[in-house]
Length: 125
Image (cartoon, rainbow, N blue to C red; front, side, top):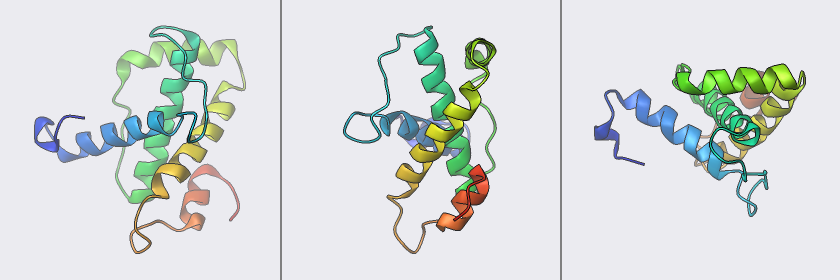
């Protein structure tokens, strides 16, 4: 990632970092998601949806007000969601796991409680 100074606002760096960490969580040695989709494919769109939801969940848990910043991906997300009416549920589930994984690296005194993470994604602690 470029250094924070390369971004117009610090929040942009945080959102981007959390999005990219969402992707990194899918590596086979971590949460083992299928990351084989080429740019423009359905698999790629689904992984982008997971990463963006992971960033949103992580931002909410950390008190960072997120916005969707990948307007160019929205079209591919819509195609993905139109073709599979459960895609959003599957993506949110995987994004929640990714956010839990990413946030698990915070020091104990800075980590959000499992209760706060669960409140974001609707699970009970």
